[in-house]
Length: 209
Ligand code: TMP
Image 1 (cartoon, helix red, strand yellow):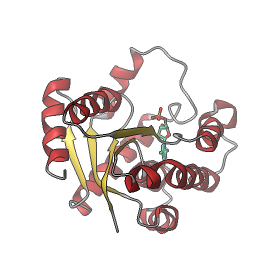
Image 2 (tube, rainbow, N blue to C red):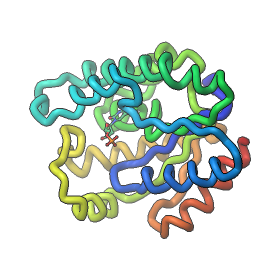
Image 3 (spheres, rainbow, N blue to C red):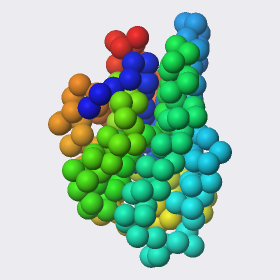
């Protein structure tokens, strides 16, 4: 997989602490003088945010086919790459994505059982070389994830309504990615304090900058 310098993504099942870690990472990098662009996936551009609404709408539970889901995640990604990510990287900025193509690998490839091969061939087309040089997976057990998200109290979206065995497959997908693609995917234990997790994340990112 061809990768893009200065492009990073964070991954993990819900409750793994991605937002907190991205906040901490951006503060640290900006303090060092880096110009950073942050985005979430699906989303980050107007069209991609509209696709996000379709993807997460609980009204489509049991209706949206797995292939439609796969293609919509890729469509949202194609737009944010063209509109936001490529221009930012070309301008010398650091891009940090809250989820990217490894989410599709884990959720659609493993969670939906579409298979890694199918997902990856589509990823090649969508990303066309615009792929994070490093992805850090914040690894958490499904049990710990459920305990953390239960505290939030928000109504679950279509994906969050999936059962524990779906998220177990997603987690295994992430761990498989870290095993099979160690050059661009690292998994770290997220079941620690934010400061402990951040120490590992920061070391991994700084090694690339
Ligand atoms: P979140 O940004 O609030 O985590 O919501 C995004 C949801 O979409 C989350 O449940 C993970 C899921 N997702 C996929 O299934 N495939 C993907 O490619 C991406 C980016 C997200």
